[in-house]
Amino acid sequence: MLLNVRVVSWSLGIFMAITFILCVLYGLVAPQRLHGMSDFLEAVLPAFKWLTFSGFLLGILESFLYGAYIGIVFVPIYNFLSKRITV
Image (tube, rainbow, N blue to C red; front, side, top):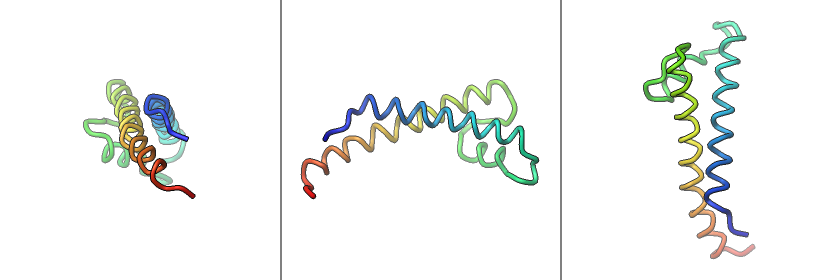
């Protein structure tokens, strides 16, 4: 079975955006001593600033684009190998 690049890329992009939102919510709810969410997100997402509206929007966009990129790269590799490797 071959994968569709568009479906996988959109799915991963949306998944990553939702995951980003959940990480921000966790960072707001949990005490700072229990996590380093702000430091982690600022390290992983270029130009992201913790607890600013523009930083939040940029974080969602960057997370979505990371997921879409993974789909765009992964699907052709998977499809290529699935045609050549039979189990």
